Image 1 (cartoon, helix red, strand yellow):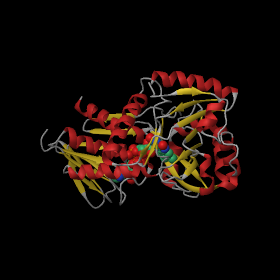
Image 2 (cartoon, protein in one colour):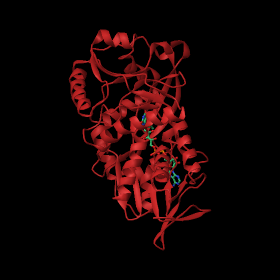
Image 3 (cartoon, helix red, strand yellow):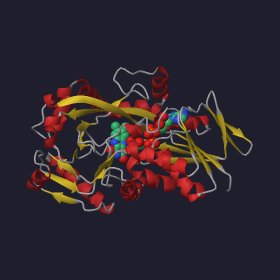
Length: 397
Ligand SMILES: Cc1cc2nc3c(=O)[nH]c(=O)nc-3n(C[C@H](O)[C@H](O)[C@H](O)COP(=O)(O)OP(=O)(O)OC[C@H]3O[C@@H](n4cnc5c(N)ncnc54)[C@H](O)[C@@H]3O)c2cc1C
């Protein structure tokens, strides 16, 4: 439709990738991104591990499996084109116990179905060749897993949107969405915009903003803080690329891992601690309205009843650096608590269903003129360009 206006709530990497894709596919459409913060990529996009996943973990046929593989290939090409950092430093998923080996084999079968490029199983000697300070019984090696800088990619997408005639309005917290003529009025306390279509990509606030637009069904977002430690510069030689544990299939999180950054820093983390505020980057951050929403959702209590042991372990690791590093030392035994310093953290927007299940796959709802991205956890940064294609297909369909 010519002269159509599409509003997007949220200028994280998902909203920006969708905005950019609209300007490419629908040249007559005006795109306006509304972002509450004074800059793009202020939340998950700017507080993550910077890994471009290769698609090892995801249920074959799921949106995550399909969009991660395609998204990684698109991102690789985009970064090469724009001269943005993209380093295929490779990743080892390491089994340290007999149980791990069984789960590693299941993971290898899954990765095979997902056609992960170049993936192979390696033994203890080859682990040492790839990562001289790591140890394990067996591992999966993914040479194409990469690292990048998602904040820079997000800024580049914002520049693309502006260059194509779109707009990114910063400092615009959407507080009201109401029908207006054939479309919608999307407003902050100070400003308003009328749109024909609205796409919600509000990360940790996606359930709240969706509810403003009448999409009141679950899932609800439960924030999980992920805290990082940074390895002191004199010890970063201990990690060449990425070293991950074999994930526990009951959780959507990958476990504390070692991550090389494009800056040359090496980080350990993130853990996964239930946060007491949606933007609770520090342990002391508490928001009573957020806590109320989390506590009022039946799924929270069902999840707590199922996973309280893991919850207590994660909180202990959060408080005690020594406990945190005990888990990490199973993979790189020489690393000591004294070799790391506490670093930043990120807050994951993890959707939780009413029955207490952590929503694993990406979830996108469409309700008339509103399309809401209700669950876009990792690997959504990797997958962002493919998620954008998918959302446009949903809109066109
Ligand atoms: C600790 C951590 C590590 C991760 N590691 C990886 C990784 O290595 N690889 C990977 O692929 N993925 C990773 N992820 C996941 C990835 O970062 C996210 O999936 C991705 O950034 C989601 O992007 P988004 O645009 O949906 O959300 P966000 O980046 O959170 O953006 C949402 C935006 O919406 C805005 N907003 C919210 N409410 C409103 C409102 N009312 N009005 C206006 N604006 C609003 C927010 O300010 C925010 O800017 C990680 C995430 C975390 C937290």
